[in-house]
Length: 208
Image (tube, rainbow, N blue to C red):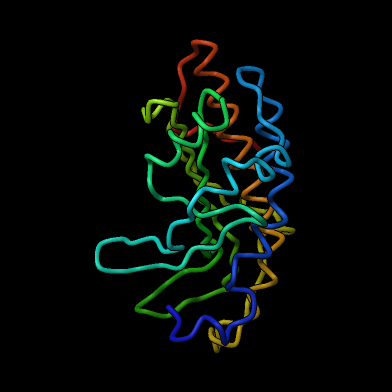
């Protein structure tokens, strides 16, 4: 949408994912079906320090997107590296989490012949994908969820100045992005727990 992301305040997701780190760790640590290796143990291990980082770029069709990586972690796209990391760490598997953030318009306006009538408000929409690999490189868990603000959530839904979209300060949406990502993590873990407990799991589960 933008010719230069650097000129628009708040489009860089790095501050968001850095703040999300404790929430993600806390959510995964609460799972009763696996034990999470402490973050400090992972980051200080020789296996992780010696792991070669891949180029921080995600390629989709003919497009390439720069990736941000949380705090002191490394960006790894090669699935074989996850299996080797699990072996080197002496654990059963490694989980990779990917978060994508976008801006979703509210439904409180009417579009007629290209014109928008009524106030147009926005919220952050977060897509979270989780993939877990075991020591043999097999995918043992794969899931994703999309979370956006519920109608009437005045804390997460805000009115932006769209008269000049390139002048909009998207930092206003950071609190919404944090909240939606946190709820998305809760959805993923709840669905994982239900699966492990042998319950039927719906793709449309939500956590309010």
